[in-house]
Length: 262
Image (cartoon, rainbow, N blue to C red; front, side, top):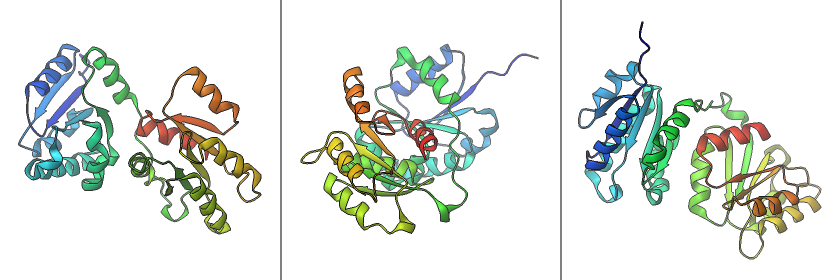
């Protein structure tokens, strides 16, 4: 019996030349491609034959109420179908879309423009990534504190992980120290995601203060850094945190890493 080709459905909120090009490229790579436009019922009707759904989000969708409603309906159907979903959209709209349509936080995210030359590798990675496991005991979740002066990034990370962890956010180093010293023992923080570069009191200074306080010295700290150079990573690790994560890491990469540390 011939082997079934991997099925990929492209759910296009607005069909375009770019979407058509993506469809053709995937077909050239040997995938079985199903375009889904206006008839969203096709999402559930064809779910058995699909290994991955690509949700292609048009630019400036926040300003278009009709398309935004269409995206919301598609996202809810995709979230229920139980298949892997990768959304493709503008970086600047990601956080706002997660606020407006919570289901988008459950999907993988690929920023525009799509690197067509490396599309095969991108698809292989998307198809091979395991589905995240949601914690069953919501009353006994581990607690994570995000310390980052970029509230948009911190909010995005919270949306990514709030289904597995209790999450708090502070946007300055001294706020983190104050917060941690006021937390009751039964509500203690289990892990800190700490931005390496912050104004006034930076990540390394915060880590040093944490290690000097008996109440906080044993809390695992993972640095968040946007600099992936060997020199930058070496500087980070010389401070002996429990680890570091690049800010370019995907949602599933971050969750998998946190699971290994808590």
